[in-house]
Picture 1: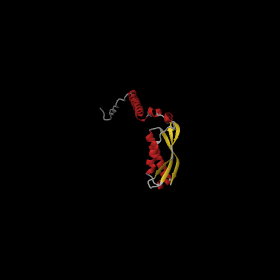
Picture 2: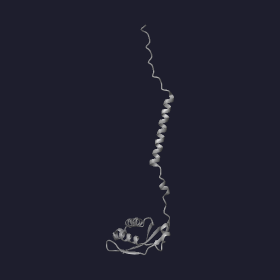
Picture 3: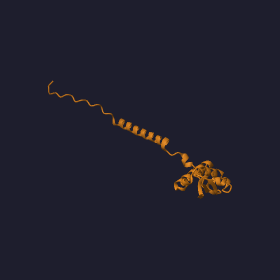
Picture 4: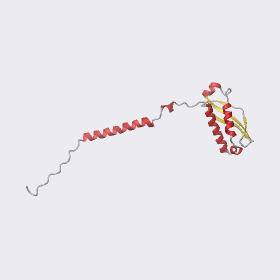
Length: 155
């Protein structure tokens, strides 16, 4: 043979058929979409319970007798309370028959711990009102929607 003989060309690997790589890509994409949908369904979708949760409907307002109590520093507070009842609570016993003992007790506990100076400041009065609102709602277990201070006199 001659020195000028050409070297044989390297044999290229046989190319994979295009159909197999496309099928593999489609299977991977479909698998990712299925896993993503399943992840959304299990972790992120809104639960049906929140849609079914009842929004409380306001009923009557129960006015309680004004309450006079001692503040922590020896001064006096006269406070009037009105309670916004839910419609269910109003239907059960009406605003006239509503027992306000739990609300009055909560007012004595909340306001009796405060001083004149604390309640004189608007932020202090608002903090006490919010604490009373939270405590009354807790004690009446959903029967009271809101607590209103209808009278607030300190001496």
